[in-house]
Amino acid sequence: MVDITHKITTLRTATAQAIVKVGSAETIQAVLDKTVPKGDVLEVSRTAGLFAVKNTSSVIPDCHPIPIEYAGIQFECLKDSIKIEVTVKTIYKTGVEVEAMHGASIVALTMYDMLKPIDKNVEISTVKLLHKKGGKSDYSTKQNLNLNVAVLVCSDSVSTGNKEDKSGKIIKEKLEKLGLTITKYNVVPDETELIQNAIQQLCDSKTDLIILTGGTGLSNKDITPEAIIPLIDRRIPGIEEAIRSYGQERTPFAMLSRSVVGFKGKTLLMALPGSSNGAAESIDAIFPSVLHLFQLLNGFDHGKQ
Image (cartoon, rainbow, N blue to C red):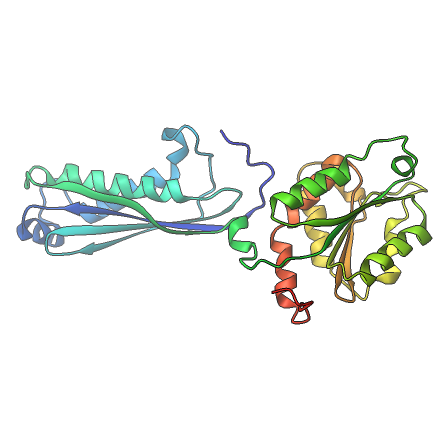
């Protein structure tokens, strides 16, 4: 199966449709009157559909087992057909499109089986996904924000050349995949004044987003939070909590990180962990949904629309 461990948990919904065509209006009337020899067609097929939704991963090899938290099946009996709609909801890391389509398919197949003794012209016409919602794509900005983004690596060992920077490169790569352009990429030692000066220079050059990596732990040299907190005008605890919560699901050491996020004027500052995994997971936890902040800021005018 596809690896979904990096995905965020969101409310996901999907609605699928299937259509069962019949040979005569008498068949539809028999369904409505509940006179079909094999039983109540709508209720039996509804039951079969619910079982199908919940057991999709057992019959479709690449489907993940999903905690189904809602499944609803609706019917519309027309003159020569029955329209089936199956809606499925979950709060999970992957969508429920296949679950909805599997449910609709089994509802239709159950109807076919129950109706074929009285109507030789029954056929399953259309099985398709009507709509879905949830996941990162729904929480990403649809607008090209054209942001100026800087990555600032805070590390004594990297600044002296004794260690290769990995976390900064990972952040840069992930942001570029989201369509963002990294306009500045700098390395500074773990010194409060140098970090603050670097941030001020980037703010003065109208940088929209500054992502710092490194120095958020609890060693004596980890002073990045102490360096940037005095600069922040509006701190955003929810983003900090999201980063730690996402990391905590993957390693218990995430609770030791002191990620800090907030605005200095119109510049968003983010201090992320310096480890490769910590940096990567932090980006996965909050992007691209965090970019919605820049749509909320009416002050994002910079001549860039």
